[in-house]
Length: 294
Image (cartoon, rainbow, N blue to C red):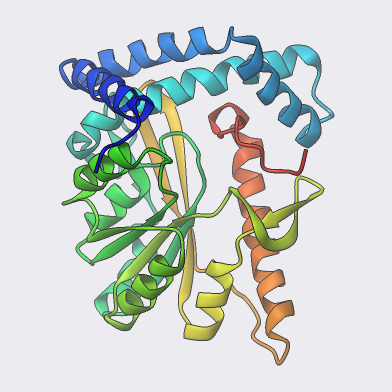
């Protein structure tokens, strides 16, 4: 099957940058990514998109504060992309992480379900380097399936799918086929990792930063119907290429006769948690994404 020239050019550029970052030590690659990300921050359309979303979600901030966050957003994004070739090399520690290390807090919340062969749903957002979350969780010895939004470019999508091999048992692109794969995985006692902070046009309206945001309800629907534990997993960049992954206690949620209300209530709890993480480190979230209606 022939692909448009644009797709092939994008694929070539992605592979080129990947080879460049892979050839460098992790810390050097991350620092170079920050420099390239900083350059993107000076492009007016990109800077304006982040500024618009910051004004909407955090109106209490001054222009100077928003400008600092805006620059940090692009630096973090550049670092995250540059670190991708090195994901499998990150060592884990329970102590204060050094350069190129990931501190893991709360792994004890994984073990009860894992020891009993029970599935869990782990959720996070596009924070710090979000690709680290499934990689870290998969090292605890239970099969893990990651749900992701497929890139528009099918060449890049296929290539990224191959790269995730060995990190997660499978990567399931959002859609009807993913729904079947998720149900099959859960029946086998496998766990699911989801990023749930992006807009879903045909989702449900849930408050996020004090405004209505169309939110994907799949996490709540699965948890309520299948009686599955839901664990929040936060990823924070501490300094350069050192990180902290925090697994929190399972969410407590009600199951009543009103399924729709239960779903909305659980997703409100999820959005509240995400908002707390973002407010703590706003420069590490994916603000270029248009989370709210224009």
